[in-house]
Length: 213
Image 1 (cartoon, rainbow, N blue to C red):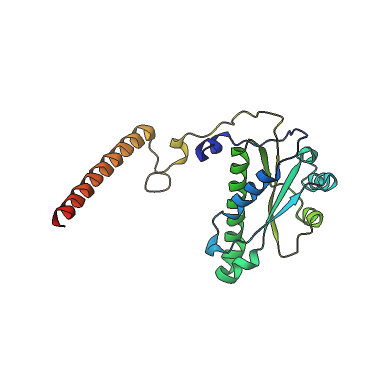
Image 2: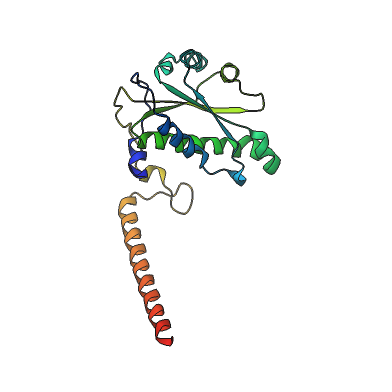
């Protein structure tokens, strides 16, 4: 499955079949998180795999009594160690960049789970201290979320999305175009023409170089 398709098909799944997730697929999901971008390439994330049923139940309780989570055969608790980002970027690294990095890792993992035919959900509502105690997270770590992963037992419909006209500004914040689709189509066509012209010029230059030789 290509990346665009995975982005379009990803859903928050809360019902799972009682089927374990193959470790080969788990490995690909973890690798996707590992290859996420991070500020200064610090890679402050840490991933805790949870397969034990009792632990999954406790995690669901720590996540404001979301007991459905226990039915997912795999949880991945994603945390970051912000002090590592603080060393390079100070307070901004500690309070922003580390969390951004963790979120980037989460999204990568969700998309690769989808691409492998798995359902997933990013759970961010939890009691920090209770969840940290369940997974043994140190006091200097921040948990970004819990990913529930497994084979879906539901087919959630795609929720409504804003159109591009509602979320895209041109050149400055708040500057919208009601005819964005038409404008974008024109711009895309214009760019393609420029690329074709540039390619033609490069071919001519290449021919002239060959003649000189």
